[in-house]
Image (tube, rainbow, N blue to C red):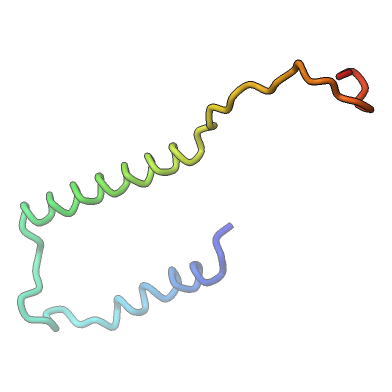
Length: 79
């Protein structure tokens, strides 16, 4: 379930978008193709970086095997 703050933001987003008048900023317009392609490439790189970091952190570490030649006292089945 999404937190209530996120739901509130999603509900208020159309209200905020309706308050913006078209043409209110000078030079605003559709993005050119090279800028759009660059933004998409940057998004892909950042997404892959996040996935790689999560994979590295979640991957189990290679630990040396436990030494089973020790004598354990008061541990049933190990001594």
